[in-house]
Image 1 (tube, rainbow, N blue to C red):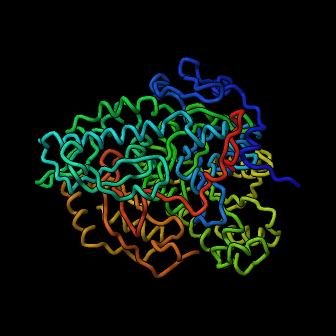
Image 2: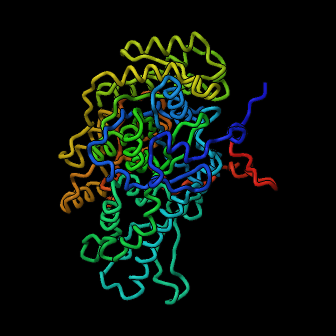
Image 3: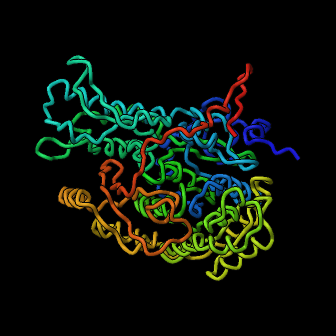
Length: 559
């Protein structure tokens, strides 16, 4: 049997014109800005015009167990679940992050779902789409240029060159740019200093775009960006450089959510894409809010495992935007669970109940966190693989039911919405339950206490060790009045701990905080644990090597 590639499945699909998708959502054409036949931006003014009386639908978060090289399939499950919900007669909208060019050409080769559970036009979404990523890069780099120009032109603000934390960015995995020296060549070429690039999705501009609730809010957040300090140690902001207006001008259209469709012609908002190990890792507030106004159910996704994406979605995005989820889906695969149980990747296709049982504590810990820390209803979605055996599936179901949590087999990759009906029915039931949603820490807690709460409650660490540099910076940020901000913990996605090699559900470990960084515009404090890279590199064989375009403009190789 031939297994079609994701891109060939997408290209065989005949999408509906985007006007029809918007009409089905009952979005008036005055708010629809077409980008060709199959993409559109939705004007954020629609929220103001609707007013506070417009009822919100129910919000469902899709998260996952700790990721492994075996794969989990969050995006595929999210899309397939939305299609399944629509199949059973529930008006459902999906809200996803945008793929980043760097990973698309690096590790992933595409990030718009998979199989028969995709969003289309798949090639556009994975590449330039509507230009949001480029606008974010431009705004980021405008601020960087204005910083260096200010220093070159006399430095009236007294910016300490060694204190500058603002980096340039580019939407490509390029390790060569991680750390460099700029301004060489003499006076006309600028002031020499150490510099570096982040990938665009790691830029604070991305986080600001995703957390802003209006254009004015975004402009104020841009103004509040702290780029470094003066020689007296006082913060220097983008507003002092008079950069926020021009940056907002570059971002005004990027703030508008993008409307596309699934393979089954259901509406999908694709907007924003911050990394989940260095930012809050989820779809924009603006897109989520619009989706909630026009769908009875909204399915959204947070990056990596629930200890990263879900924690940040709940503790940062929901807190800041006043969102309240109705249910959570935790995606798992039998393959990945066996890998957490110590089975090598090349043996995952064979039945191994011992490895599966030893890997299950990873999933169970994520479930327990959602159910007992955040107090939200939860269901497990097993993303089906042909190699899964009945005995393996029964074991997963048995262990989850001990926690009072149901398991649904998700076959959306192979069957689209039809393969998501069982999961859809479980989600609808969960949404009817009342919940006592709460955060893992209080806003008023100290920075140290917030970090400790996440580390002990979510990761299950024994405690937190702070470096001298981290302690000093925490004290400084508290004195400056930033102590009430949420914390955004940058940690490896491959383990509950800060050691990527500790798989499963490790115990008896501590989290080491190396330093903290203020994101004053995004309004959270980034907490650095371990060696977290904000500029990935390409692998030995980049996905780009397999991507091509034929004389008719047909793209191949995007998986």
